[in-house]
Image 1 (cartoon, rainbow, N blue to C red):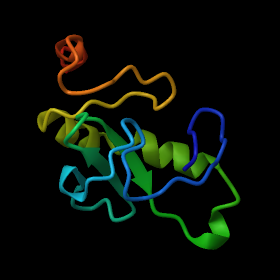
Image 2 (cartoon, rainbow, N blue to C red):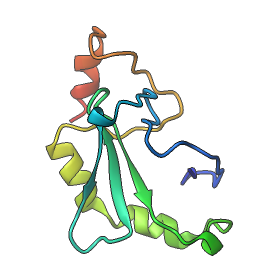
Image 3 (tube, helix red, strand yellow):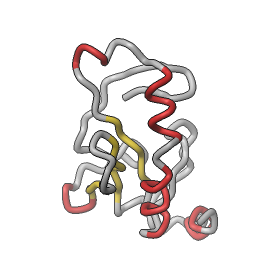
Image 4 (cartoon, one colour):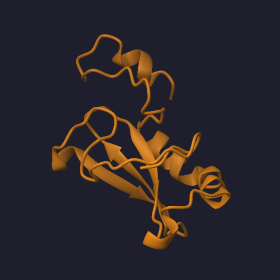
Length: 112
């Protein structure tokens, strides 16, 4: 994974929600949009969060460059599709989510 704000990179298991750490394959999926071959959104049905992902080649992985930021910012169609499916995007740092029965969960959904 890589942070688009500070360029920090770290290893993270692909089949795991980066927000609630859910590993149940039935709850995890992805959204793809036509004409965006290298960018998709990984989604979690348990916490209703999503994170955009960018496919990069191994030789590019050590260089975090402006192209990634441009790709991230110009793929609003993926964000729209995620929001239409009631997913929420927010930073994985400081995530407040605990579980679907959390009394504050409705407050998170109001962001939509």
